[in-house]
Amino acid sequence: MKVLMVCLGNICRSPMADGLLRKKVREAGLNIEVDSAGTSDFHVGEAPDHRMRATAKQLGTPIDTLRARQFKQSDFSEFDLIYVMDSSNYNNVVQLARNDSDKAKVKLILEELQPGSAMEVPDPYFGGEQGFIDVYNMLDAATDVIMQKIQHG
Ligand code: 4NP
Image 1: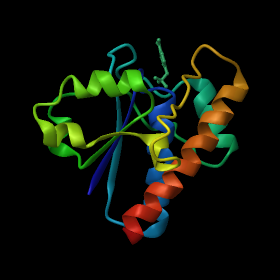
Image 2: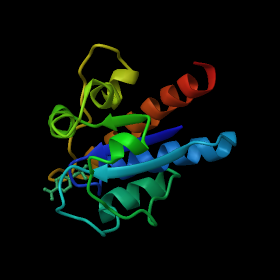
Image 3: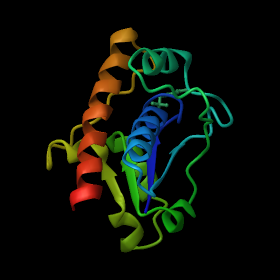
Image 4: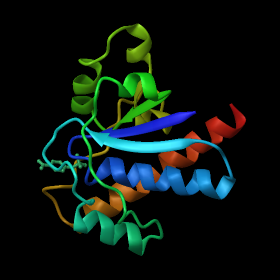
C-alpha cells in the first residue's frame, strides 16, 4: 500500500499530511509507504516552509527532513491512494490521469472526515500563524480516519 499527499507547492499542506501519516504508520508498525508532491514546480528541492516546520515541531510531528517534488503522471502507477488538499489540486491532478482507474485514486483528504462535504484544506501560505495550526489540526484528524480505514477497512 502506498499513499501520496498532494498540494500546490509541497511545502505546507502536503508535507504536513505526509509527516502525520508517516508517523502514525510507523507507530502502528504497518508496512505502508507515504510520500507527498506538489502540482507546481515552484519549490522543488526545498524543505517545507519554515512556518509549517515550526508548527509541526511545536505540535509534535517534525517534518524538517522532507523535500519538495512535483507530481508526475507515473505517480498514478506508483500509488494506490492520492489525497489532494483542495479542488484546484484535484483538477490539476485529474487532468494528468490516463484512465478512470487513475482518476478513482484521487480524493479530497477532508472527505475522509466528512464524506460528500467537498471541504478543503485552506492554503496557509499567504496568511498568519493560526492558519498553520488549523492545517495541522485538520490533517491530524483526517490522517486518524485514514489510519482507521487502513487498519479496519
Ligand atoms: P502548499 O502552499 O500548496 O500548501 O505547499 C503553498 C506554497 C507555496 C505557494 C502556494 C501555496 N506559492 O505560491 O509559492
